[in-house]
Image (cartoon, rainbow, N blue to C red; front, side, top):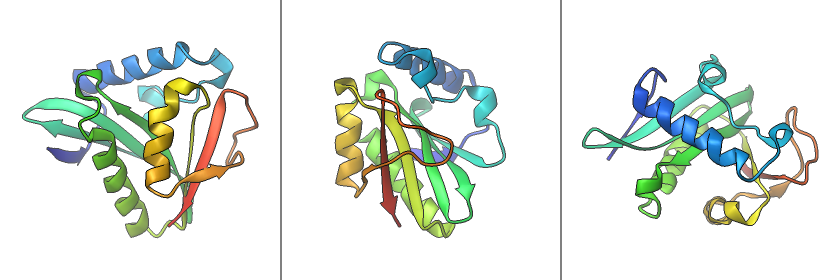
Length: 151
């Protein structure tokens, strides 16, 4: 498996992100969906990574710089064919190392508050994230859980 910065041009990543956005609609009302589409992910403040194995896309993740000391974890998604194989953890570890290397002091995230997101909560907690309040432009929302980690 290898991780690379992705230019968000390939059909594989477009399909995975479309699946990601669709899955959000199953659990949250539109005003509570904070996943980004391809165009919004192509911003200079966002770095986007994909994890591949033998030419197959397994998952993705990104960070968005909020300020020089604070980043947001975005777009964590594992292809459904590769769940429970360590894809998300491998990406998360890579992104946390990158965030430390960039000098961020904190990394935060927003995820769903429904039981469908429990595997994500467990992964983030395993890596030192704890619940926190809204950050950046977020507001309190019953469909959102906010987590953060000092780096």
